[in-house]
Image (cartoon, rainbow, N blue to C red):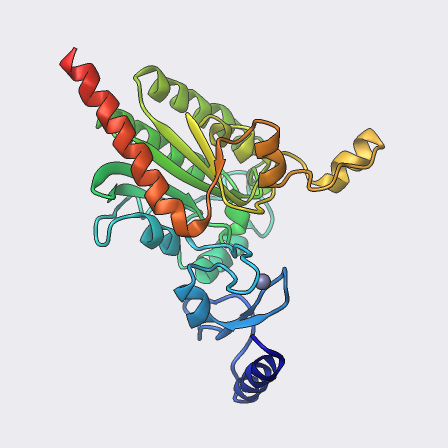
Length: 295
Ligand SMILES: [Zn+2]
């Protein structure tokens, strides 16, 4: 955009703001905000522009966070996704103060019953099970219900001999569920081990941010681990690590690019290529499966 166009764009935004439209993240169930500002280059875009560009900044390529259903639309063949266990919701098992209210607000903001959405679908005509963690639901944190739903998706894939693709975006364990949420790390990892021993394919796709107990359990156990560009991926936050070890962290620490360089990831995939790349992986897996049947 040249300077004149940028000014015109800003004037249009200011006019819209005066008419009472807001900036920021969308609120499901309420009037949708019309604009979003790129945290990387500060350019403001209408939500329509961002939706058209798959929630990737048209100016600098920054990958905005994506809701579970937007992600499903991006990856799965149109109309192929059949959601499972959609009605499962969390209970306040430890009677944690205000947790019920937090859950209620998270449902309103995200339009979901819990942070994990999964189901059967096809990707480029190959049948698969796809699961997505939505960071707009209490930062995509993993409590008992999310852990159970992730386990159900793994077990369903195992039972039906389907490949499993999970898109993670999470702040880690759900603190309101204390040790119960930490147990989900063992539960999901054990289910993943059984699935792997049966020859199941798990493609783990790490999106911004994937941290804490989610990264430290099933999300790191992918046969193939992909990540989106510039995603924050790590166990603890950089400030906590710096304070603990008393050292300055290297440039770009805990980003997809840094982790690829250090052998933790198989590939960084731009959002525009994600569906094709996953389709190719499923095709290769399918060929291997048919070859083993022929033996
Ligand atoms: Zn940008």
